Each structure stands twice: as C-alpha cells, then as structure tokens.
Length: 331
Image (cartoon, rainbow, N blue to C red; front, side):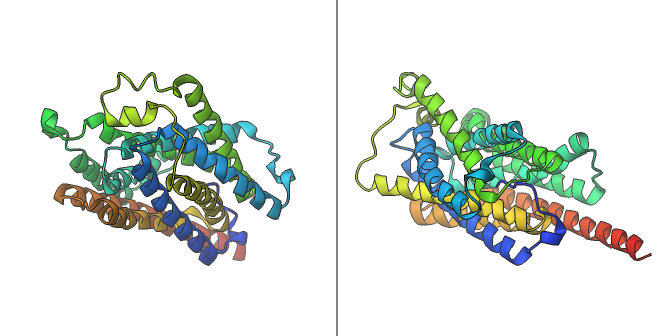
C-alpha cells in the first residue's frame, strides 16, 4: 500500500482509479511472491537495487509520455525525500520478514496500517475519531495480537521480533500517508514513481558499500538477517528473467498507485487494496503449499473487518461533509 495525495473531487475518475488500484495490488502480490521466492539465494538490498534500477528505466519512458523530464522538477524536494525514506523503511522491513513468515501472515500484519493511520490522525492531524471507528480499530488490533501470539514465549516457531517487522512496515507506511495527507504532493504519477525508485537505488547502494561483501552475514544466525546482509550474487539462468519481471512490476506498481490516488479520493480507492489479502493466500498455497492456520485466519478476518469499517466510515463522513458544503452553497 502506498497512496500519494488525492486529486480534487472535480478531477475525480473513480472507475479508472479502481482499475489502477486493482492492477497495482495484483502486481504488488506478484512482487511479494517473487521476493520471497528469491530470498534464499540473493540479499534483499541487491534485489531492491536491481528491481528499482530496471524499473526506473521503464518509468522514465512514462515520464516522457506524461510531459517530458520537466515534470520531474518539484518545489518540495525534501517532501519527496522524506516520503521515499519512509517507503524504503516500510518495504525493507516488510521484505525482511518475508524470508521467514508465510506470505499471507506477513501481508495481513501489514494491513494494520489503515488502523494506525486512523489513530495517528488524532494527534498529528487533529482529526476526531468516533466510537465506531475506534471500535473497528480495537477489533483490528485484537486480530494483530491473535496473530502475534505473544503468550507462546520460547515455544514459538518464529521470533516475535520477526513478526513485528510487518507492523514496523505498517507504521512507517502510515506515517508516510499522514505526511502526504498533511502536506500534499502535486506531481505526475510517473514523477512520483521516479522519486521513490531513486530513493530505493541510493539506499540499496549504501547497503552494498557497507555490507555488499557479506561480512556481516557470517555471524548472523537468523534467516531474516542473512537475507538482509548476505553478499551480492550475480543472477543466473531463469533468475535473470525473474529480476526483469521484478523491475517491470515495480514500474507498473509505482505508476498505477500514483494514478489511482490522483484520480479519486482515498476513501474510494483504499478499500480495494484489501484484494491483496486473498491474493497472498492464493500465492502461499500455489507456490509453497501452505494455508493459514486457525489463529491466522481469525487475525486476518479481524484486521480485514476493522480496516474496511474504518474506510467505509471515513467515506460516509466525507459524503456528509460534501452534502453540507453543497447545501450552504445552494442556500
């Protein structure tokens, strides 16, 4: 999930926006599946670099279509840097968890982000949150607790800190959303995708300079840390095509997300991001033959239900405010 600022209602094209978000979510699901599939042989920072380096080539082509390199100029460069850093942190922590966690479980934990956005909007944006939305948020976090199962202690199969990584990803994503909502971003979808991919390239190259030889992975005992810190390896055989697919996927994801949230308001678009949850379950079964257990299913349903109630309630409130404004104008 990642949403640039929405366009004004006058420019709203909800049908097109829903099409773009469904395309983006489908590609995100493929992206997550490919990264998990390749996580046993390549370091995360190499995968992020190759994905973004390939993706930015295609994205610059879209920049030409949308107006040329001039659209890359921005009055708020530091806003894009801040958004990029938050999204890089969100992606890196989430992908690190993917090396160990089942795809459906990691995806469901990340979908706590809308619940966090609702809570953070109170202190950071001064918004008022009613009893219904607070109850939905509480139900969602009960689902998170059920999935984390902190009461298992030392008997747990996956360390609690690994399970917490998708939640950290959700938190940094939520902060990005709040910042975007507060400051706004007036850029073309392709330009926003270029800014984000450039940030990924810079950060992954920094990882390469510091840890690209794999020296920090030698003492690492956990699979997630090895995935993050192992040495770079030249892709071979069919893996080269998978990396190319990752790059093309990154282009489609960045552009489609930007377009979706530029063509309609977040309340219209965001609920369709939850299509990613059943897709994650499908990939987990098709590729790895795994299905969520009872506690994970319970957590998924609570997080899904809580998030959708929050979105639907926000959309309902937005329509009520719009009607009141139109009523005052007519009067």
